[in-house]
Length: 386
Image (cartoon, rainbow, N blue to C red):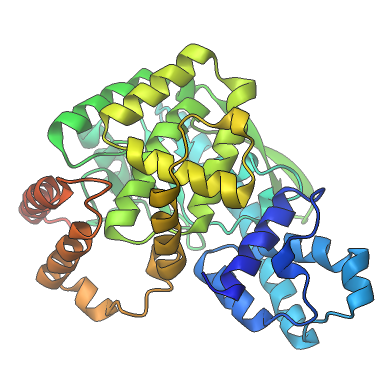
């Protein structure tokens, strides 16, 4: 871990815990802010880091030290954060619209990750979480959901769990006819059983999201989002998937932090036990323990919120991987994007990558290969693109 990466992590910690003493890495007269911001960009944490920066810059120690940041760089950073804020308000509005439109057609929905995660960040940080697309779990199964999408916004971009839904020019929407999958058949059956057991709660978990109306006035819009028990399993599986195939960054780690922060106030002991058992049966326990170490060590997660015992060795390995690759491999200079788009080369690169991650799944190289071959054939037979 270099200085800029440590300083980014400490800015994030300040944003989460403004009451703590200034971290040692930030007790310096000169900080290479350009490098810190590059790390924040790689990790999709520009907004959260800016909140931490504002707390840091207001401290008496910093004022007395004379530490500064280039004004042009600060202006650009502030502008980026304003864009993040505006994007979140827009996505909140679009999220509500998607839920409302599907409800009108008789579909029950629940929005996964994204704006549901942001809601847990609290008032000061929720609009500073870097947003992505809208992932909506829609009840009904593939044929019914696909049929509706084809009537509204025809597409051939379909994979084993989701369908691209091109209804907005300013927002990407992905419709999940399955909330998630694991490529090992027996474990996938366990996952599907668990997720379906949480479906009723997810389809009825109504919340209010902050948005803007046509006059640029603040409004609160209705949406439906997945629940914390669902998220703790689904997002752990999601982290594992992107660790093995597409890169994972600290934004997703921070999302999981806020899921765990709400465990004590929202989950019964039996629900915690169920989650721990399911994660173990899915082969995700070692990954969970590594993640806990990162969250305790660098995000200051209270130990009362832990569901797994932290593992330092695996945690250090995982953090190094996160810092090197960034969110969706934005920081991995070794990746040739042209090669990644080519089917065989992509398959080969994923296999080579997975063999380096055997500590977290000894058999992904085998089951993942079979799954990718099967679904490649399935997509080709149906005329779908991925």
